[in-house]
Amino acid sequence: MKKFHFVITLLFISNGIVGQETSSVTQFDSILNQFINVRDFCISKDGKEAFFTIQSPNQEISQLAYITKENNAWSAPQLLPFCDEFMYLEPFLSYDNNRLYFASDRPLNATSTEKKDFDIWYVDRATAHAPWSAPKNLGLPVNSELDEFYPSVSKNNNLYFTMVSPDGFGKDDIYVSTWENGSYSKPVILDANINSEGYEFNAFISANEDFIIYSKYNEADGLGSGDLYISKKDAHGTWQKATNLGVAVNSKYMDYCPFYDEENNILYFTSRRNNLTPRKFNSVSDFTNFIMENENGLSKIYKTSINLTN
Image (cartoon, rainbow, N blue to C red):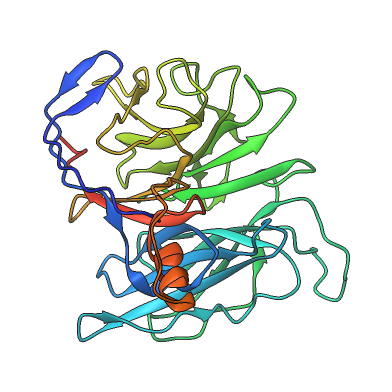
């Protein structure tokens, strides 16, 4: 979305100041300005493929798209070939880059025209240049008659995701399903250091499961709307109380859908931040470019350099 023009070298969080260095927050790339709403970004380990969600103004249409990098420039966006009339969102690449997870309300039966609740699905490929398979439902025990969203998978294939359940702490909660003997275990809700009676959603898990970044909505220590939080594990493998990533990343607008490039220390995330101010325009195209290129209150992908691994 919009460009954040200040530079801050100390990250303020609710319990003090930590020495995590950041740079300015900027839009990912101008090639995505053609979309009204774009969100849910992930990027391959070599930085040459990126996947994201594109949506209609009111989000009733949602599709998955991708771009590739050649000669240090991103290609024109393309839809993933399996997208159809159903909803597709929240892509996440496996550690080897050859499995793409996502959420969808597509039916289990490919011949049906009746949408399902949201489940976690995936497609596979043999190599980065091979075609994707047909979508496969992750099945029980991960998927259920409830809605499952925003898959994120560690190096050892443990799966973290959002579920809306009456048995949770609150409205939306974050769960983990561990990979055991070639299959997923029954999902377990993360403890009260992560979840609460409010909304917790859109969790990114680090490759080694030593930290998790996710969104919390309208928290007392928040900057307004949704903010990104981080929790790290202690020496005993216990999640510590999550802390707000602060003004170096968050805004008073909705900030959500994190993805962290651990190799290059770059945080990608979606935001609805808005900095539009009235001015005189020379033409309709000048007006259009100004609205679409700047932070305009619609969801856009941002990035910032920040070291979260220390």
